[in-house]
Length: 581
Image (cartoon, rainbow, N blue to C red; front, side, top):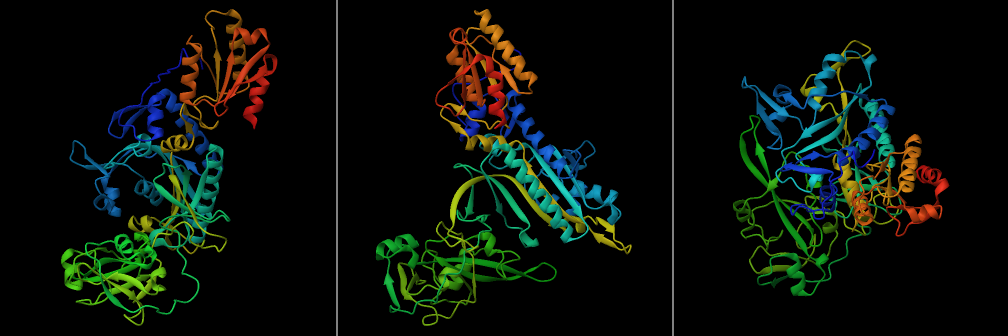
């Protein structure tokens, strides 16, 4: 491609609403253009990046035995009504009506449609396994679209769906996809982690997120530097402390803490570590009869160390809270504790509650908690002596850096990541809702076991930029760059020698299969170099009259601080050698 025939449009300043580096740089580099809130046009430069992402994904999905199809963006609501998602999904699901007043959705995902295909087309165990995938436009009506392509409303996604005869076969299909995803992200040239994720009601370890490591990432990734252990914050287990609970050493006392309603304030007032305080979280689970009528509620008190935070996913697995839970109302709190939040604790209750202690809180001695009286806390509290043992001890907190790794191979560290892929076993959730069955060897119908596998095609370039940029602009890995090499001739419009050399090198690289662009716009060197540094083309060759007279050209990688002189006669081989590394 020659720059004069392509569309190059860069900006000196990013729009005021661009919050993160990828959004700013994609706008400045002319890769995307805002059409509406969370909706962007993919400009020619940005579309080249997206097509490269798609090509790698498509190659590896095909290699793994998946079969490509394309499902409609607009889907009849009847399929979503079969699974209940038409009503259960919130306003993120865009619902529309046609001229005949029939309901449709603009798909954010395609489980219903692909399950309908499977129930029509897959009749026998002999047709299994099958894996269908698509690379398709999606729409999710985000409440707060932000960060450009990172959290847009319209986006492109690769979603795949596997169908198997039983859970063991589904696990094998899952592993094929997990391996394919590792090949895909290895080829992208990004630093990433595959982390264990919570698999919801299915249980087990059949869920992994693929996270691109970036300081601006919204997700916390927990990993062990000394092993392969990695998990997201919802999944990472906080091990029970080693050793027995210490014996009581302090007397129980009611201590004044005027105006100090948080654990941090109380710890500061009393001059003690925050880890000696206990925070009280009051939840409630509603009790319903067989007809679904509300009969009452059960109030729960969760106790965690003051320096720890509750993990809602883990709490949702506590027996009794695993159906549903909510934070208790002020009326429920007053009824059971007789006090406003900020001074709550497990002593001196007005009515009994279900008491759940985190593993760390359960082995604490001489701890501090609310006295259920405003401006007072209880100090020197001990299990067994001052109150009964908790009804249940469970892991209900987020891990913190320095916790022991669950695999026993060191301690945990935490870094930020951007989720760009997810592999997950669905089980029979959708096949049961939509009666998608096959006939086994005995001629009996069995529900299909399903898996789903997603990659954010348009989110991935944004994640790559968050990981790879500097003050001058984007730094693309070779596999994702809109152009791999840019040839920058200085004074091409004035020097026949420069023009001939530039076009000769351009043709040589094209013939070698290199994705090369020749900047023949006649721009001044400073403006020309600034454009390609902003756009992030990884390899640059500069051709000038002076260099030609010396028999030298200048090569510079986007990460290099200075150019390297290379003999003009061997420049094409030099470049192809660089690309082969």
